[in-house]
Image (cartoon, rainbow, N blue to C red; front, side, top):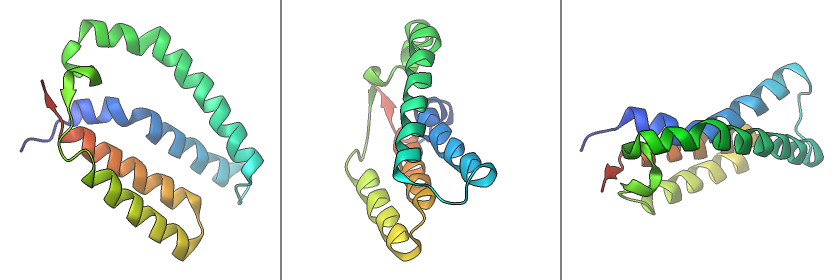
Length: 119
């Protein structure tokens, strides 16, 4: 099996960006993440990623059809996210730090996208 680094990076970029945004928030603004702040951060992030998609990513997918997720077949599409979810929930229950949960889930998405193949 060949790991496709380029597609994996492009596909998992939004969730890694969310994770990095929350890490920067915790480092520079507040040491805790409250639910209202978390939801506001996700809302702002969603607006930014929607704008990014319509301005740049959609054109990129039209010119590079091999990178379009609709033209990919995801192998092990249930196993990897389920294992990532189990590991992240265990890590959250042990540490009560939501950044670990988001980090493990983003790593699971990265691995799953890397092992996808073109149709």
